[in-house]
Image (cartoon, rainbow, N blue to C red; front, side, top):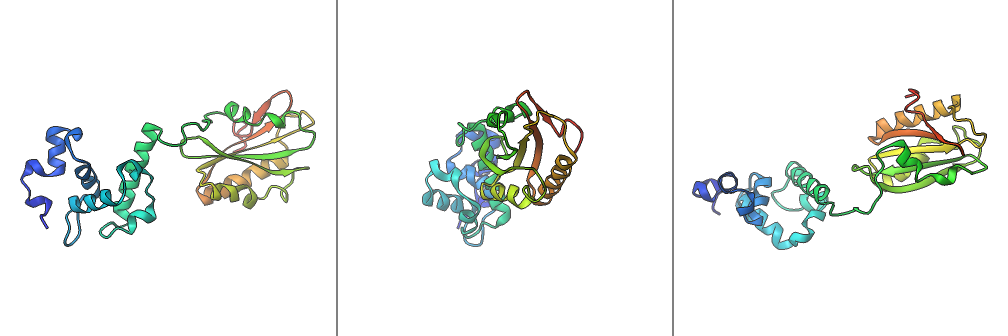
Length: 223
């Protein structure tokens, strides 16, 4: 094994990048920089070469944590660095999920909840978002009179776990047309916010929708 430090300075990946620019490095050299160090018997470049021989470059961005930690010489720390770099690349290039709608405001969310405007019964619906604020799932949690037993945090966050959501927006309609949050609405929202904090899934907003318009519990300072 030739250690990277044994190479001439101009052949070491990090020094080569600084002197010549990233576009002049080979794929294995770029990956070796992310790995930082090798393991006994193999340099970072050799480990990087092994990874690229096993996984096609065009598919490498889809590697998961389990795939990486199976590679000898890659612990959780190195795997996390690589996954972070891959995810940042995917976001910059919009490699995946680029057709999913983006929700950046309460109005964006309401655009996906139009059926609630004219519903005759109270519907409680959750929108599940990924880390890029893209809508990845929508689910009706309950239909009928809204109360704590019908809208339990476990029913709201179960789909969040299943779909790996980073955040949720919840909404329900008031067939009466009243846009003001009731005491039950406030209690329910507080419970969901607390549950989300514990689970690491942000409750972005809680909306009330009527035929005439909508209101945001978040904007009403109920949070």
